[in-house]
Length: 488
Image (cartoon, rainbow, N blue to C red; front, top):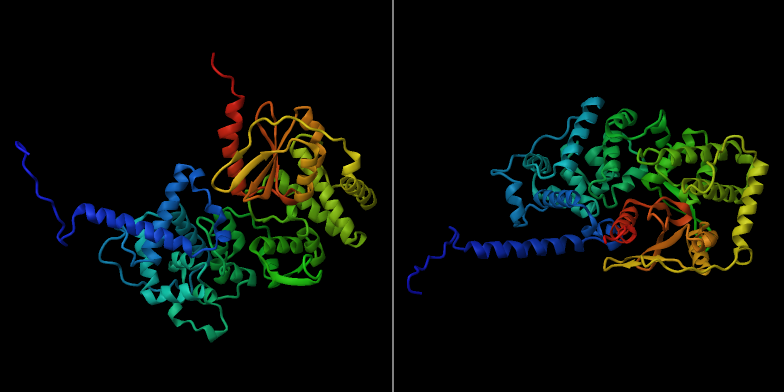
């Protein structure tokens, strides 16, 4: 065109235009993401189904974490993101963690490293340290072959290996995770935990493995990491058996066994520490609402004290209770506690309760549940227009008559069936939170203020982080705006 000069296309030294390189790198980024996610079962990764709902800080951290994984575990992936993580040349391999490292020093090192890994995964020095500890590609291949579900996390903690994966043999009689991290015996449930996926940023059980495998004090570590580790807890943790018996109700009714999860193992150890036996553990484990991690400081104080009181009461009256009576008492007590938290009843206290009176009160509650079809009136009420369903698979639906409440209560094993009169009186609104048509949480909302009154899963268990997040987003996006007065 007249009056304009044509500028030559600038090429890189390798002969590729900048635009071509940019587009090709974007394509490779997408290919890597698809390949990375394809290696997981969807059930293993439910926690990250709703990335769109995370706040920007969390999203940024997750992105940095994935880039760190790519830079360390998949160093041959030609990704644009690696440029800000790596400097050349790569450092040479460093020696393994010294076997004579003092317990206190190991705790401080691990705590500082975990803080860097979770809070600043984009630190280029951290990337180089991990790659230096990993060594050559063959080490990564050994871990990926024998620990496919947890390989990335185990490689991220390569600076805490005490042996190389290249010196391990499948015929040695020692698991690969023990070979890498442990010089002392480690509880069997932790070995199993490292066979399963380990998701950023929840590295608690991997840290436990490292600490116990080097004979470090879990109680001392708890003060640094923020775990609630009571005295002698670690001693009883070592007594947890490798597998837990479960009743195969759906098939034969016989007792089978499966590996303890870390939460189950902590529950078992705390029951033993408080003077209980396997019988007491089994009675608690049959009711999902009592299966909590007693070392988790995020458990609300009221919930933990109620739980601890239940454990001590069961232990104290073990011989006077049948399994049926114990189950009914636990269900009734949980109902009373959740009603207290919702502001509907007085606080429940375990202290001073005799066995006879408690069992009788629990029996009445149990009979009321079974007779609900005949004992409760039929109610119906208008919906508030707060139902929600998205492409992510989550849905939130208001229950608008007694039959729906009865179905919800039967499916979720709690007392929401008795809330019909409250809903009709406009003092409560009940919603069923489902994921892919499966009930996950029942929610009570104050219809006048939009306040979340209570939320409970199966058998009155507390909602997990993802479920609470879904409910919070729904309240903020749909419920609360509809109750705000409109201008003019």
